[in-house]
Length: 350
Image (cartoon, rainbow, N blue to C red):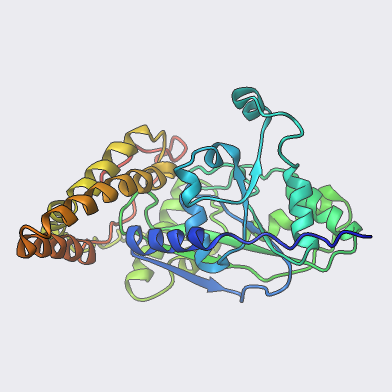
């Protein structure tokens, strides 16, 4: 008797709910623009700009579609509460964690099985994120996967996704996801398919000539966003025209009082987030570390609030109201220019 194929993998409900909580609390807004998202089995290829935070952000568009995830993130019991997907094990991971070669299925084989079973999959072809004016080199896995899917006669499409952060390391910054048109890849052979898919992803991604071009596009997109335009769409338009605006971006309202109110109302999450970000080695992973630290801090904050509630309900409610008001009115942080030395800057506090 033939064994029926396994159903496609979908992210657990707890993962999508936690991702939604991160998006709503940490970022000011996450918009989705561009072409409609494909309803067919789809190989989504996504730009990678902000480390572990990208997964929660892309879930705004992709819902419960899984992605390939580094086994480093999946080994932590705490992180497994809100991160899941198809594990990727590198040779360095096998040596570091003592993982046998046959202990984890090949991510390439697992991804192909996911698409052939009627599901969708999200790939980050860069493999790693970096806050620079251009994408990191794309790994060849997406071309190989597309070639094998075509050879197997799979009914699928490829759809590129670009993500744009007004400030990747800024609390309450805005984010935009721009979807390109879904397409069935036409090239033959893994190398040609790789080039075809890379070109499609470049068209919806940050892909500037240098840091000066990036700063100009970022500035133009920020000004357009203050007037109601989508930040990512405006960035792509400015990037396409290679604009060099002379007018500086207008700063948002300072609202120092809101920052003070938030710190007073949510002292433990704020302190834990700032402490956790000290482990960051670049702007592209500050937000993820802040979220992890903030979750720990929020658990203790909730315990303190619940402990106070029976003894002084008025004080507990006032404390909670201060945190909510400070979060709601917290000022949107303006973009920060890249440095000419490759885009890495010291993480900022807000």
